[in-house]
Image 1: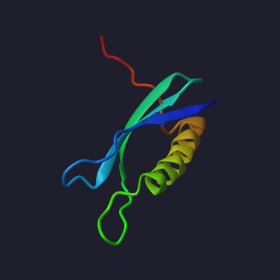
Image 2: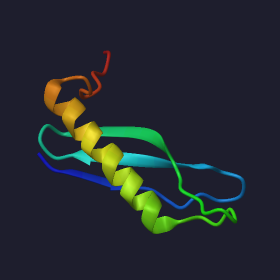
Image 3: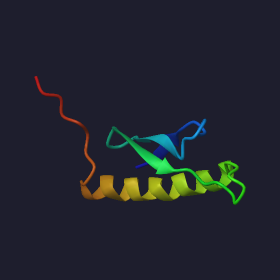
Image 4: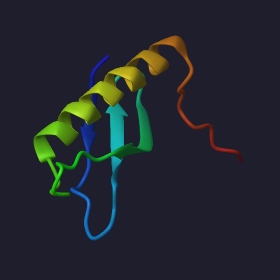
Length: 76
């Protein structure tokens, strides 16, 4: 089970990044907001935000493993 993620840096007054987490097995895509990291002067800290996203990603991976996060079932 591998988890990857993608997101864009926040713009304007945004304080969060919208992260798309993708799991290969099972095939699951999970989207959630993650708080971005800013320094004392209010400058966006990309490296620290990446660390935070990675930590959240490990939680997403665990939730997929135990079945808390599952693939969406389309209603027909």
